[in-house]
Image 1 (cartoon, helix red, strand yellow):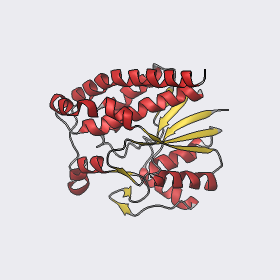
Image 2 (cartoon, one colour):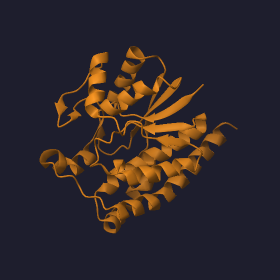
Image 3 (tube, one colour):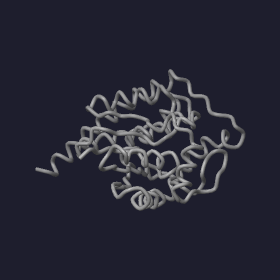
Length: 238
């Protein structure tokens, strides 16, 4: 059975990608993560997964997974020091995303999944996680574990994805500045960080050298977490 793991919020971008993946994969693991700090409306992703199974095909398996301990290790244990060292609020969002990637890799190793992808779109270039540099470094991390990581939704236009979902009968939230409200979980710290951009159109500036240093530094912790998670999984099967 050909399987793929999709980091899934249930928003327009990840849902449109999930529809496209159904053409190639027999089983699609929809992974929604909760870092436990300011996240709300997590049930929205499960509702979207039900729509996919109903409107597309019954081949989607959804899981809501807590990454609170991982996020604690990657960022929160050293938060004050990290703010001083990297001098930017992007570390919250990038640290959370790295914890997600670590958990995804561990799950792929557990279930023998060789393909993983992210449902985020290139229409959000203001987000540090979507910088080409960030994606390149993350792709290399997956490659270390023999997993092919891709961003098929990156070049998709959100307007096209929106039109696709509307035509298929998916429930969509209210439109606001190219986004859909009430269609996916929310992260209050992330919303606060990007609030100046949403209100004033002023995207935050992320120096590539600083982003690279942060990802490379934190990837060392992610590798340790993956080793611990896979060891725990192996012990559980003995």
